[in-house]
Length: 538
Image 1 (cartoon, rainbow, N blue to C red):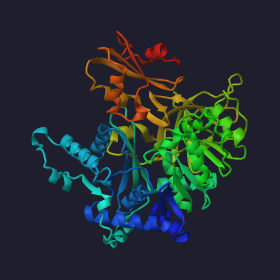
Image 2 (image 1 turned 90 degrees about the vertical axis):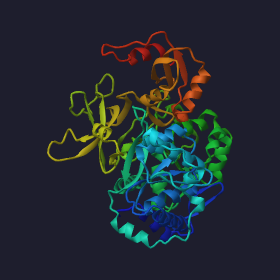
Image 3 (image 1 turned 90 degrees about the horizontal axis):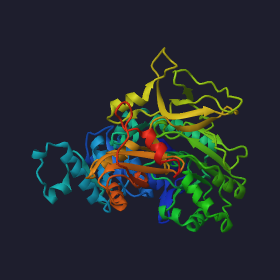
């Protein structure tokens, strides 16, 4: 197998009338998904001729038809980039400016937003004096090279004969998608993932967790989040079914439990904060989940107390802690919970996935031994590296950041072998399992997302009256602190300023004004001092 489209085609051949992706309003069978995807692919070919292995942004809500749109982009010989319809316009513009996609694929509901964003990117790219204000009619046709394609106006009779020619030229190292993560300079980074990355990763995921045609996923994470790759593509490969859970149900836990039971969800792969909702409200007092057999989680540290609540009330289910960055497709290590843990005892990250290798390097550049200190029960800590087929191609249009993170294997001087520096500090426990310590840089994990604090700081640059500022992450309280000097601002005013520029999960949780920003010997803001004074769970 060399192409992820074979997942859909093989499942459509085996289970043509089985639901592939659905929500409360209905869904697409495998036959319908394949047919709809092919039509979209043919339409894209007709609209943007001669384009191959180029980015196409997809601006849609999370729904079954979105999956057909993504697959349609792949059928056209290009790769997709998921845009969140609810993200701030400025962030969407930043992504598109870095991406310069061949088109934006959208629908009637979001077509005006797509046009506005595409037009803004055009203005950013051209000399200001050369940009004339376009008439509305001109904008409706085509905006520079970024064409806006409205799915609700798609030519469903587009000739599909060209798809075979496109397919014949596709190889397994061609890109399937790029997922944009936070960037320290304020510019998001797009990790490019290939067919071979996904195929290798999903082979492991399928085997490790027994995914088959009887699996019914309850999908929680957005499609622009790398965790969605696991449940979506393992569904398509195995003829399983994926139900999209309405986002609002995670604020109404009784509705959430009812949804899981109504659709007989037997497998979930959620961020820990979503699992905590069930535990915090003690929902098993009000509803049982007899169909649920597998509870997988990733994206942030899973607190042990809520996990123990789940295990006490659903004792026969499999529980697994998965760990990995977007740059390893989704996951590079995992741990299937096989023993009891005290409420204050951290869960391990476990071991490397099959066909993926990880190793730990200390500050001296040497591999950290798994031998533990008898007193602490842990080894020395070091930075986690990952190698193998899961490792992404690099960052789109960002050679500098790619060279920093995707490096020659320092343990292999004999032939070219790129590995990924995760930036995560880890150590071994007495079982030989990896345990997470913290981030090496000041990138954080908050609300299930990896965030570069520098991107939040970059957004603050437009706020008038603030002279100097820094973002600090309070690990104990799981809060982002925005510390600044300058004119005193109302917290609501500051929050609104950030709301206009960054996604909800990047918004600071506390605002602190100080008279003078501390600096270290290098003249840089002393972030360690700020954290010591203002964080610590206060």
